[in-house]
Image (cartoon, rainbow, N blue to C red; front, side, top):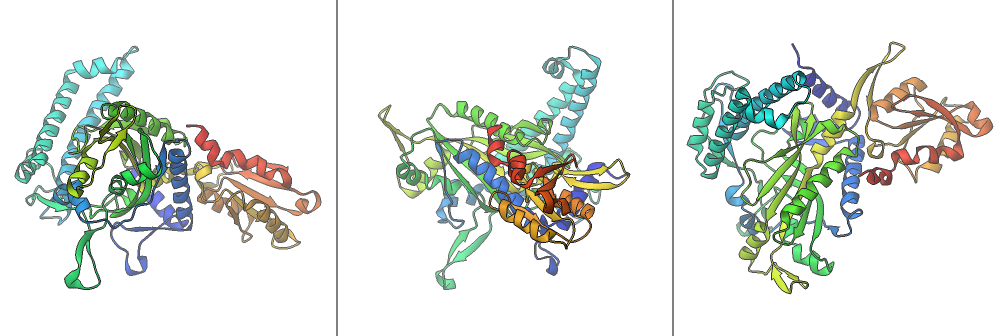
Length: 513
């Protein structure tokens, strides 16, 4: 029997292509694995998400500024950051299906199943007991304690194998956990090998003189190498942040689940520089702030949760994810990390340049600690698109598909639709469009019956439709239709802007945070 969530995901993917949100890249040449193009509506939605993030960071915080660093960086940057030596994924193949996997993700799949079993036990107990104490239950219930013990054992062993780069032990863990290939169902695995995720190329006009460089695997390092440039030219005082939106590239072993994991993707990152010893205070601050930013969109507070990292990266002393309930389950949407002083200290060592901050209040120099917030723009796009997608059965027996995109993020804010292509209605509709297009992104359409046009705008996610009819020519009023309620009201043309302004305003959305 088909999983409804799988069907939902397939429908979202199909809808995204049909209505100009996302296309497979180079599709006329049969596409390129895990690479996608954003269409006319997708690029607008994507830009609106960027604006929402950028204004939150730089408009609502007077101690955060933005930069746009180059994709190409000096190759020593990636040696200093640890990417040359340590940016690897453990790769394993199934000999029967010929499919390739990340060994750590196969193991994490076992952990996820154990966590799901714990949640089922918790849910059953919560229904039985009126004054249910989750913490007490989790720590005392024998079955849950056994599941948690198993999770801890697996995590400890996996973390130890990865820290020692012991690929043989990692394979043995796959075997001991009796993990089968989901395609072939067999356990005929190859050895685990390390696979570096960076794309490399050459810079130089003559091959013999070329230098090996990399497409950046993250945007953060462009911020770190510009730390002093920004601090001095902006006269920034700690604590302060540097924000950036930009492309990154990773040669993923297994890029899957549509735009959730791609080889070319976009990040929205902010590095917040703080006084050593104060990083945990700011870490908790940004965890709370970033969750509120997501929840302000109204996609459902229950669709978000924190997930603390048990296996910390080499540069971190604390890390957690904000997970979102995607069609395939809860997955990472944003990461908040306390990166210590690792990055600046390492770049200081490799460059020979002093990367320290002079604190005039304490009269001392020090290398700041860093708290990072990093959200994948493409994953953010998917969270909005998937949660907005609704299939509805209407009272008259007809069906409609509607994208309930938060109005400030919608590709078009208003569609202007003349009822007929004659009698001066198109000309009047164009007049109205000219009045509104400098305030809102407008869409004009005059083809097909008005009902079909409403359905197309619902499917694109346009919050409002304005219908221009013969009465408009008489009294300068129009019909405004609401996407979500489908209710229509008659208003004067002069009042149209005020009717829809607050609903689609980015400023009003930011005020909710």
